[in-house]
Image (cartoon, rainbow, N blue to C red):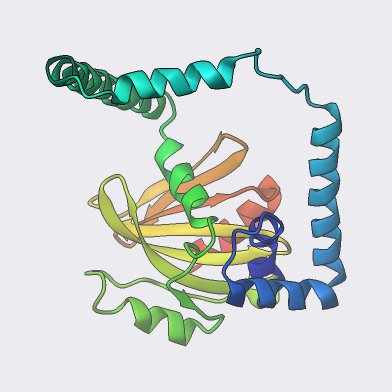
Length: 244
């Protein structure tokens, strides 16, 4: 297990959210890695600080009993009112769906990078980062063949400080894309690649929710890089990817 892989699992490990195999792997890695020990200690310190300083709110007296009574009342066998209650619940659920969809639409329209950042954040969840794990470009590139209908340029930049971690398939803007994963110290960088009609597009960079998003197109492929590393370092990887 590498530091990059362990770093994203330390939090779930401390929360007892990992299966036995991953728990043993993370424990073993942390036991022999000073950097990951510091990461673990920082998370524990943050948790303790939150426990000490964040306000706590005690429920009002009798709340538990009132909730139990409300549940028993709602579950009581009353055929005709039950149908009305189900109808009202369905209407409320539909209204909630509409509200969520509208909010999501507003957020995306106000932030064109929202969906690509969402895809980046999804990948950071345990088990979602890579479908193929390898630092060998000659392993990652053939893995995509037959799974998507376009060629994916894959290169390892370990000598420049951006080692290839692996790749996966992802969905962005309703279409399937390839995602290449690079590391930078304790950070992860996603590079989403997909076909585009306009073969060449200039480089554009923006920020969204603390992440830098760099987009460009060349050779009929659109590239979108998402990371939280410093802008100068993100630009360095962009330059390497564009230098064909």
